[in-house]
Image 1 (cartoon, one colour):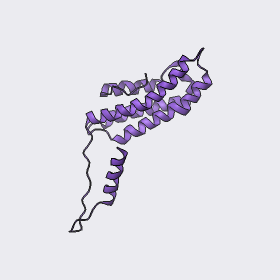
Image 2: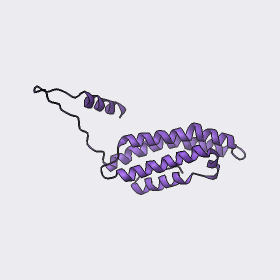
Image 3: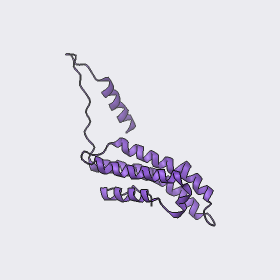
Length: 149
């Protein structure tokens, strides 16, 4: 997908001259909701599987999770994974007419990231409210994979 995007950007940036000196722009079709959801869910599966693996390690360790370890995982793994997820899904471009819904999901996720950054140890008490909201919005939109469980 990155190669196709790079090729499209290169073609759009360079354009082409025809015999009359005109320009033939490259126009891409808007992504359909079905395709958007397929790609977004694939992005979510990738990032959230890393988050869930780290959480499993904390939960299966003997005793209560070490708050310092929770903080380290939150800052070093969870936040970058969620930031990457937001950037990748945002780069897909929302289906035509669904821009506000997709933006609301991404904004709620960004609010969740900010909540984790503000108090990473609060993850011991559960998923921050903004991330739960992002999950509900994503599921209402049709996602089957996006949202920390």
